Image (tube, rainbow, N blue to C red; front, top):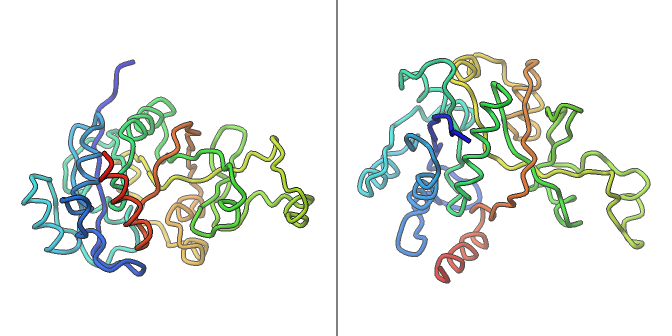
Length: 257
């Protein structure tokens, strides 16, 4: 199958509440943001660009041959940051940009390709990825974002709480808990693809109260009446780097490679 052209933009802000200056932290000899960009370069993207709000990240990227641009420090979300970049790239309205989070140094390049191709095939203005939840810990972990879908694989809602809530199972979870096959619990993977035309309108949308409460930028899209197409993937990505424990885990994986 012929792969359509797309661009990867990686939002990378310096401020992090759980891990100070994490984009610049060392991962087996390279800064985290450089590791992420190098992984994204293994995809079929025509270009990979880091969008940052800090000179340290900009300088690190340039020192390692990674394309990077400075953006405003005042963006509400990574998608807002990417929208600023899209407005300056001169891309056609129908072209696709894939948002790869800056703290995903082990992201599978095939996952990037699959999301881009899904977005083209479905003619979606906004698309993302999910995979089945397999463990009880994931269901009740607020750092694991869940999503429920309609019959056409468009998102109905995203939440940090368990959705759908298994009334007759979750309330009795201590006794022989088992996930029924029809429950179809899905974990959202924080990667997005958008048309340039959609990005041009995103920042003009009112910020949703739901977006602020759940701290999930994709809820702005649903709140304002747009669809979010969801690719169900059998590729389960390695976790990103949010905590010191995550950092140690990724360092151990890279050292083995």
